[in-house]
Length: 540
Ligand SMILES: Nc1nc2c(c(=O)[nH]1)N[C@H]1C(S)=C(S)[C@@H](COP(=O)(O)O)O[C@H]1N2
Ligand SMILES: [Mo]
Image 1 (cartoon, protein in one colour):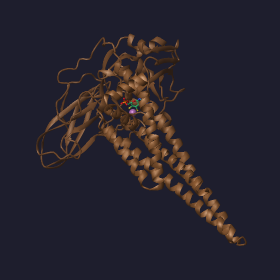
Image 2: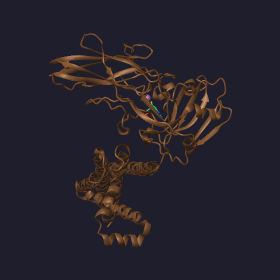
Image 3: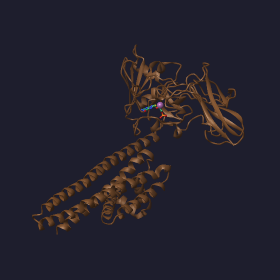
Image 4: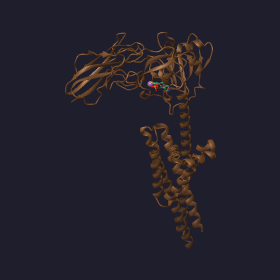
């Protein structure tokens, strides 16, 4: 009798283990969906699949019964089905391993199929359900094993009790029974600890990840519905500004290819309606601006190349964009800067800060801006939606604050930005540089006439000339594209009669002040890399 009762109890715990395995599966998938592929939520994909395959009369019935709550009803039904299926998988795994894991893997395969067959999926969309299946299976196997160990120790325990009764005077037998009781407690605790930890983590991680995904989706839709006013002035891109060479970076970096550097674990989601910019600190009056206030100042177009201090010589952390924005000097004028200030500490909604010399922001000759658009669309969420800073000539970490929320007028003596105590300089002008794009390193090229091409940037000064050296030859000036302005990079190229073998191609730039690009190699910390790029090219 007692046997059967405890047997039922274990079946119930096996079902709980199954539900926890299922929760870990979904939570892991939601987490990785948030990180790699937002559309890859198993629950939503399967829900979408169900909507697609359900026959029309059934859909009508659902809408008639649940009205506008039909989707919620579907998800609730799906949730219930998942809980029941997971419970069954837990019982299967407990009674007939590995049947439970097999059931979970089948569910994983089906949801992966539902995800990757949906329209507009990204290449990594298979990852969340696959990683979820793996994590869920591991937890299910471990919980089921611990449950069986617990159960086995009770059986052994009971045998110990019996033998203790049989030989009441056998002290060794009594000791054995005590030991087994301790063993049972230990195995039970092992099961409950893992169940509690994995269950609680799954709930916290799963709900948080889903909530963030939904916030992103909602701001994403606000962003795509946003209509920005036409700019008052636009940048003329001169003829000859863009060279047409395979492998050469385009003049403007498409948003999807634009490098992204920030400390944000999940991209901040800001509704422009509720966004505010506060200008305070050493000002005549504290000013608060809305998104509309910024738009009402009138937007102008600016072509500016952004560079990260972490860009190694020859690196990819540099990109050029057409921004729409307003001059920061006009924004600061609204608050009135007090004398004695020499820095603006810009703050992001996520707490990140940057220290920008005040002089760079109020300089009439420098187009330091608050940007609201990038390459013809509102700023992408990853690039600072709805408002960010862009300052020509300064590395991003001291000037290009995304998801901007405050400009505090202050001094370098009084305030410190995020990266300053972390080994980077408080002030960091961009070290002008040049990069070889093609031929790419390691790619063998056929002998004969081929283009060597790349980009060079010297924001706020301008590139005068780019030179290339092959092996130990002379430095040769190459053709540069017509610059848009001094704040954007230029493209450069030369024709090369490539002879078979390996060759070194080196590149360096000269800016409009007549300075030569720094030859001496420097690491990225504390204020940016330097050195001439020299690449080994294989010609066959
Ligand atoms: N809020 C916030 N803004 C930020 C950063 C950050 O970590 N947080 N990183 C800065 C750095 S180091 C660079 S190089 C630029 C990069 O901008 P991008 O991601 O749009 O290319 O953003 C800057 N703005
Ligand atoms: Mo950066």
